[in-house]
Image 1 (cartoon, rainbow, N blue to C red):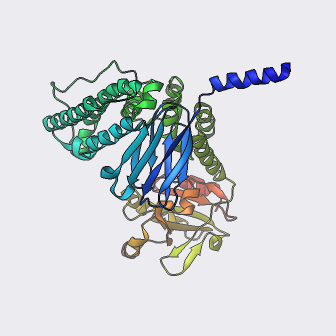
Image 2: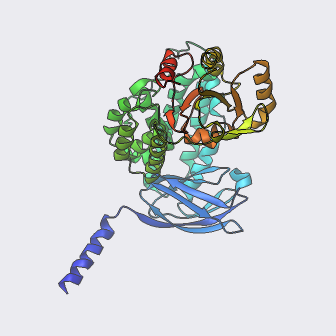
Image 3: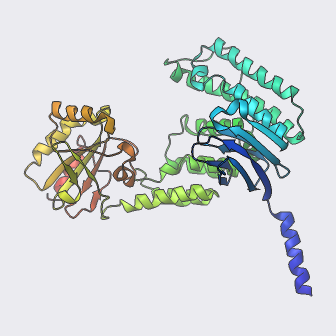
Length: 447
């Protein structure tokens, strides 16, 4: 009897301490691309298959009260969900704005968010940040006034939403002020632009490491991420090891997750400390999807270490037919990944020709794999002919998305790869032709 009472006590305590709440979301969304919608939030990624008529009803576990979103393939719809929500959604995905309707508990707040989104997206960011300063400030004031008018006339039923949304409107204004100040040069194609002395001061009192605000406001999220990168290096381009300390020091787990999500490509061949980066990123994030991405990148990077068998290719040859990696076995293979539109790639051609000439009697093949689009086949073919490019000239089957390219974890070109006669990797990021280290490497192999 005592054991039963003890187990009941544990169950009761668990019911009070668990952070997850289950709610029901239902409705009907017609004309989606594939009959699937996704509900996303922090640690939430729920895929829902719609019935043939577009209807659905789903039990959804919430980890927090705050902002989520529905992705339909064509559109993204902001959602405010709490443990008390019981939301019914109706929409035609092909004509979203005038057809989107929310009913039942939580409908007023969500209808407000839908209307707010229409106001804030009335002018694309590129057009907004391209305006001169006076016109930008005038347009920003129009946007803020429209949102404030909507806010004041909406009879919210959720007091917490109303309080936090007032701050979110402030974050909206601050986001645009910050972005314009830093991005006007880019969008207006200017150099040396600086805002005037009368430009509004940015609010220095905002706490950019607040979990509650992060979970409620998309505008706050964008501000917090932007400020983090601006504070550590201006553009956030510093090495992963230098960002690690700053990320670890944050209090907001959601902010940490987003920063790691934006940094999963740090686990790659270009990072000599990729294994340490992988382990530390794993220890920081609690998001299983981000962990999966990190692990996939780690495994892919491990797979192309020296001594491992190279991923394979079988691509169209400029001279006719196809050429595969297997066809070239028995020789070293120096691969140049390039494209006709890539200026830095073309800069390497004279150096590559000299290396080819120096090793033309040696046991090595020089293979150039173009990542031009298939629709640009004639452009590639004409370029190879007119420039009299030597070596084996191949065209990849799907640009940067080609399996060979993805298997090598390549995100930019030119990239060079060296493979030995048995098909094993010598260097997945070999020196470029203009680098004297290439000749040192080839000579060390006694080719």
